[in-house]
Amino acid sequence: MERRAYEAPLDPALAVSGLLTRLGLFLLVIFAPLLAMFSRHAVAVIVPIATALLILAAALDGRLPTALRRLSRSLLSYETLALFLLMIWAAVTIFWTPRPAAAAGQLPGILLVVLLFAVTISCLKANVRFSDVNLIPIGVSIAAVALALEFLPFSPLRDLGEVGSEDVESVRAAMLLELLIWPAVGAVLARGRSWQAVLMCLVTAFALWLVHNLVVLAAFIIGMLVMVLALWRQRLAARLLAIGALALLVLAPLIGWLMARYGGFLLPAEGDHLVAIWRDVTYSLPTHLIAGYGFDASSALTRGVGGQILTSPRNVALQIWLELGAVGVVLAGITLWLAFRGMDRDDDRSTPAALAASATALVVMFTGLAAWQNWWLMALGLTTVSLAFLARLGARRRRD
Image (tube, rainbow, N blue to C red; front, top):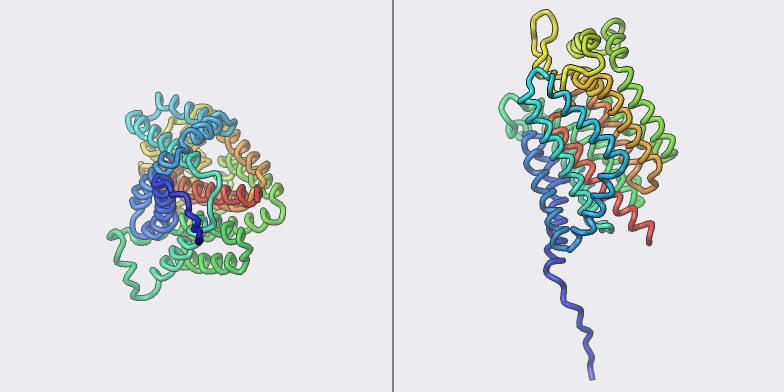
């Protein structure tokens, strides 16, 4: 008599949860980097939708109680408490900022973005599949090829962006790409395919070179050096990166003054405007050295003899000095040190990628753009979620 083995019926909620997880990751690491070339608003729209799908997948899978316990532990960690102290101080400085209404409207948005990604990471599965993590290098490869094609002669991709902002959007897409390349490299190395990691880095380097932006190239090169060092000596890389970040933060006024006085020959001609901004910010610091001008004050302060609105020092360290003062610098320094110490203690396969992404982000933030821009916060959160997926893969392999 023939006997047939019947499989247990699959729970529809689990099936839908798996589908939503893969769809959310697909939007994060494939759609967002690709569409970022044409509009930075695409990142700000797609990323919240993708994170909402990941949270909904956790709710269908019955993982919300576990996620809440993880979230509570992460919120009580020293790194998170230091970050919250920094944000509390930023809220206090709103009382003397030039435009308190605008600053009061911006700060809750930053807090909500941080909480959104914290909740999303807490909702991820403890064990992830290679098939999920493989989406990260696939998305990065597609974005790198598309970015390179955009700069070819007579490319139809150049006509798809917002009118008059093609170069700006391309630079922002390049910044997002050079953040995501490191989780992608980590995912490929987890499969033992070093040649694929080298190939992805070469294609990405070619695409970033076509953008012709000094900050983008420098950030990628520094990230690559940190990645190589972290794969060889992880703790050494974490400590050197922590020391470098703290030095750039604390010594930012001195560095700005030295660059303004003696460092003009180190930068190309287009760097003169950036050095002029650093000079004006550095010379204005002594009058509000301890408490700063107030959160988001740079959007209302004038610089130079022409009365031009500063908008941003284009240096996160100088922006913290200018807006939050020495108190904010101390709190930011503590947050950085605790964060890098946490990376120093971690021993999973996502840590080298996290250190490389951190180095890339620091170079961009210290030399390229405003610290509180919404699209940049979304890009950092997107990278963090990708690294969290990679970390879950590392945990699975260690248990196996």
